[in-house]
Amino acid sequence: MRLLADENFPGDAVTALRSAGHDVVWVSTVASGASEVNVLAMAEDGRRILLTFDKGFGELAWRAGRPALSGVLLFRLPLSPAISIGATLAARIPERNDWAGHFSVIEPGRVRMGAPT
Image 1: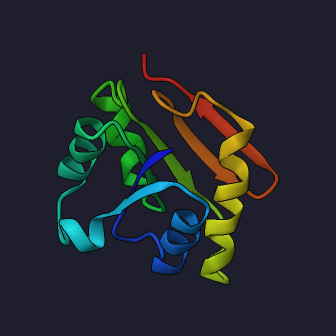
Image 2: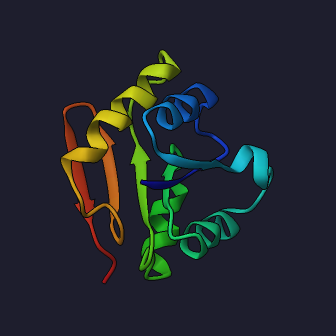
């Protein structure tokens, strides 16, 4: 799966996802300091699903009618330890094949998913 990890996404989680075979680009290494608008555009342009802990992407995605081409996974999970976040995501991705085009919130024990109107 093609993923774009936001700058706030833990490096250990990026490593875990790559080890699980996912194509992950990390904003921290390719566009450090990029605005939310630019990060969302990077995800769309690269047809990558954005991984983030930043709730601001929810408002931006809905207000702009995005993500049409990509998707956003907002994590509302505890941050300890970071490697478990990557392992959790790596385990959750295969559960669905429709992440793209949706804004999804992953919380302990549930996933909320919606598409822009």
